[in-house]
Amino acid sequence: MLQCPNCQSSENVKSGIIKDRQRYRCKSCNYHFTVQKMGKKIDSYYVNKALQLYLEGLSYREIERLLGVSHVSVMNWVKKYKIKRPYNSTYHPTYKILNATEIKVFFSNPENMSGAGVVVTELGDKYMLIKWERFRD
Image 1: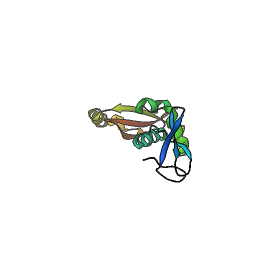
Image 2: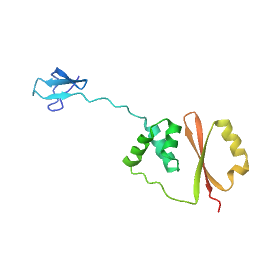
Image 3: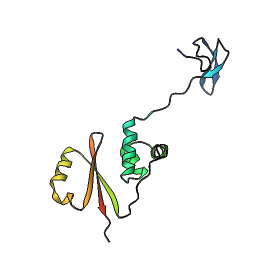
Image 4: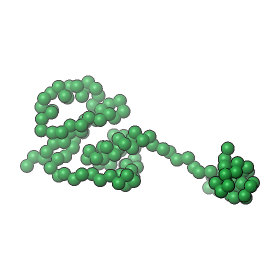
């Protein structure tokens, strides 16, 4: 049941339409109100993953391509949670999307493990491998 935002009464009647949204009038206090539009909510998993990828050094557009979430949404989350990316110009991240068997093959090669930091994170049914390598002088 709808409740009046003014007096919390549930005695309401329809009272017209404005901008394709139904208006109501409370019988108790004669207050007119509109039901709030339900927004599209993104799962918190994607918010956390997007912020994590941002901190790992990926651009907004790269995050958009990987997660399927708008780069503008990612920018808004970074602003909302006041995330600051640490700046270090001597390292740059590269990333790969791998499945479980490809991860196993990657880690079995010792050359892939030297000279860089590696982080593996879940990305749906696959895994993202983020590797930091030093810029060569």
